[in-house]
Length: 185
View (cartoon, rainbow, N blue to C red):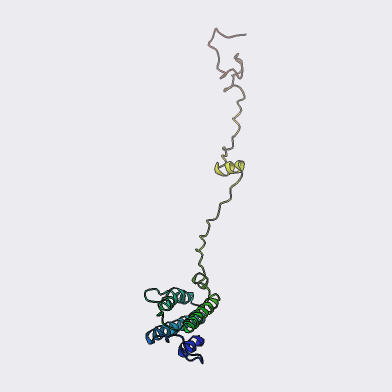
């Protein structure tokens, strides 16, 4: 970057007689302002890993952005400026651009300087164990237990006793005696 300053300061100091006029003072002041700006932005880019400063060098300092950039200033040099001086100044700023681009290639772009944040994983709800269908039915339907059946009481003679000497059949549904005259033998 100091090379550019020397080129600007030494305008018209060669041993050969210049073939034209030196750079106008206003142009020298404008180029010096842009040169200082490039240097400041370049330091910010390299020292602070600021890719935005690199972008500003290209899009503002050289291209002009809202004002006249280096490219426009050099294009607008008066025709009567010494051709050798014009060429030397253009080459100096082309070298400056190349050096800035080379140095800025080492600067990480904004997307790389900030770690990407991934969304927080949503905890999954535990999946309940599912029993096979036959086990599932057993689990759902409670086992029905029937009350323990007690054996029916035994009836010895059909519900009643047959008095001796009377004809009746034990176990005939009650053992009742037949009315007199209907007795069976």
